[in-house]
Amino acid sequence: MAKVSRKQILQNFRSRSLLESTRRLIAGEGFDAVTMERVAEEAGITKGAIYLYFRNKDQMILTAVEEIASEMVRGIERRVDPQAEPWDRLRQLIRAQLAIMEENKELLRTLLLDRRLLKNGRRGGQARRLLKHRQKHEADIRAVLAKGVRQKVFQSMDTARAAFYVNEMTISTAQRRLLGLARSSLEEETECLIRFVGLLLRNKNFNKVH
Image 1: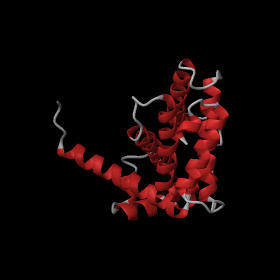
Image 2 (image 1 turned 180 degrees about the horizontal axis):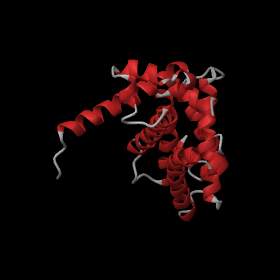
Image 3 (image 1 turned 120 degrees about the horizontal axis):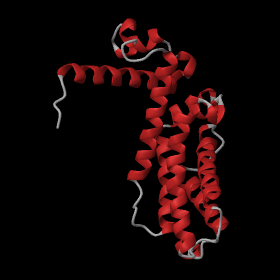
Image 4 (image 1 turned 90 degrees about the vertical axis):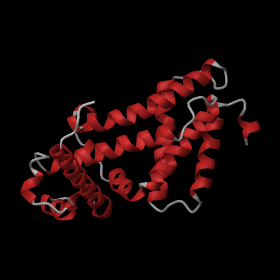
């Protein structure tokens, strides 16, 4: 295993500090609050030093948001039992996604309401970099649905499209909470969504589970 130099350790630390500062500013005040001056001040380094790590503000914001998306997908995966039966695993995926989004609600409020990073659509470089994390998560949902269909737990379906719908419903449930439109607890909102998804999939074990 290659030994990491002190210089590399310092560079990694500074890069991490810059990304964490960017993340805090986005969560607290939105994208427009992120400037090279503010990030440098938050991270405790000079403005000029930032350019050793990032070309400009846009690259720094995109890197920070991409890292957040990656962390969230990994966080969801850690909370799901890969050996669980399809319906149980799907419920775990939905619960984990809503819990992770709740834990990052201040940051997600900005990301969900301000879609400027996706302004160029799927063909834009920014959008492609961020959408790959969503696609990874939807691939996990699709695999669960496909296994459930094979085992005749779920009705036959277009699993790719269904995975998109399940993800969208989960995101919308979180967004409803972020907008202050939900009076119920996170647990109640999660149970309502799972119950609805179960009805849509016509899960034969649904009534037994609930």
